[in-house]
Length: 188
Image (cartoon, rainbow, N blue to C red):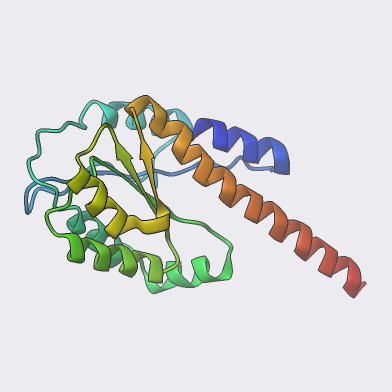
């Protein structure tokens, strides 16, 4: 995320630097979904956001049980206001949800439905399957994520995989800025 922030700030020479605001959620057994790092809103500075990101990493573990990954997506969909949906539809903001998982899912169809609800509100959702999953876990992951999922052999590879998704989005933003800039020149 830091590399993405620096790239955007340098490429677009922003007067006010962009900061990727993050929320981190854990999921496991039914009812165990919880936020381990809240969004930055209302906090004092960028350094506090970075400290919270690092502190959240220490809370992530595999001891949460099953994989009810539908719950965090349902909570995210419910938290997206109509005003935010309008902003996302206009292209003035981008929201991303990344799921890192072994690929199994206890509630496969409910998860797919919850991801669709998030995407319908204009959020980009992507899944990353980490480790060496079983054939069954790979099949489940593919059924849930399809072309929006990627396999990541080791947790250390997760950051570059997420960076590729963000870089693809940055290319789209750059194209839009260039396209709208050309339109503005045509109108003069």
